Image (cartoon, rainbow, N blue to C red; front, side, top):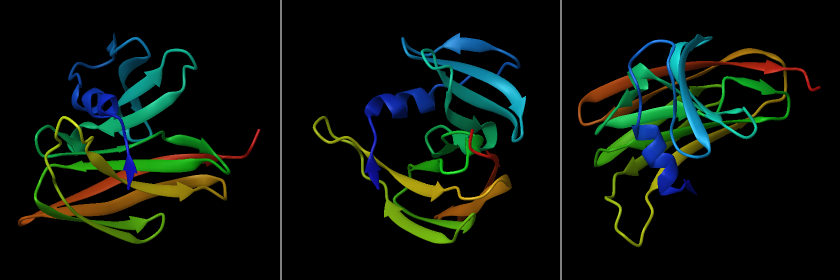
Length: 157
């Protein structure tokens, strides 16, 4: 697990539901809702570099329950796909089936003023070009949430 800033959590919680809209999230990020290889999704874009920093599909953004996102849907060979899981339930289990198998078990702990909450993170270093899927499921209580994100890996420049 990797500690992420509270700013990331706040940005991830804010979303829009209108099509083809763009809005500034803060001084460094803007959000665009557009269609891509994952259907319609929220793309968070760095204003300085114009690079995508986070992709979130509506079905994996359930405020007060969970957020499942990836850092980008287009990578180059050697780049790392990063997925973050913010599960707001006591005991949960994340099973990742593709692009590699991994099980993550955790328990939600409410953040305190002096402790930043940790999100579960999955990293996958790309080594070949093609179209891939990041696929798995999240389980808590009696709920099972399957998730799928597609991502493209291009040749190095």
